[in-house]
Image (tube, rainbow, N blue to C red; front, side, top):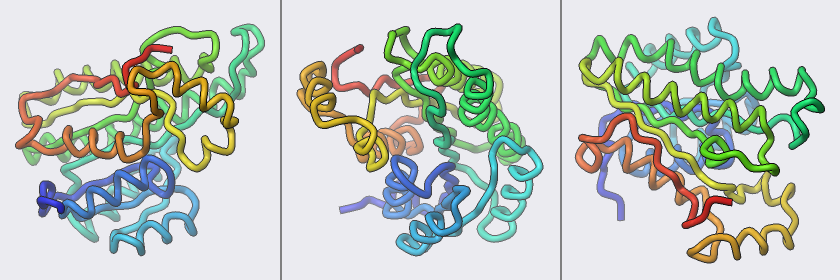
Length: 249
């Protein structure tokens, strides 16, 4: 049973053509939001869009002109965004000693996570401030909360940057009625991650979690809904919630 917690809201979920983003988009739509599905793969965007009756948009979030064009299209089709989930990102280079990290891999990973989040907020934040209302949820990672030899350094550094941007935006935009909070999940076995993480590694990860299970995309989506819902979390801003099942591994 859904409660219509986002009824009448316009919600953009970046990187929502698959994985965690798609799960967030589906939950937000079920809760009454007019959802905008974003991605770079037209077929994937269309699949999610059709499944929830949403608007679909394509954009490379590392290109500010494309981000601005996306915002204009959304405002024309469904209205100004007042719930923004900056989810798009990913780890684009494997773990390595710092001196062995490919420079191109560093730049691509930082751009896909930190630059994409910055440009998205830069585009949508002014409209929220002008309207006097907005709820931003960024998706960071537990990798950005602590050093670990298995964490890809570019990804961890970029996600740590996402957390700081989130808190800075909360301080700057709070007087204008805009909240900004983040989520820092541990490894989530999305369909893609299940192909990358072997079953024996997944089993070892389960044992490292106090609750003895891995997180799910639904766990992240429900947390995002809580942060987007002003009745539930209206006095929270500048908070990055650790979502890790009781472990720091």
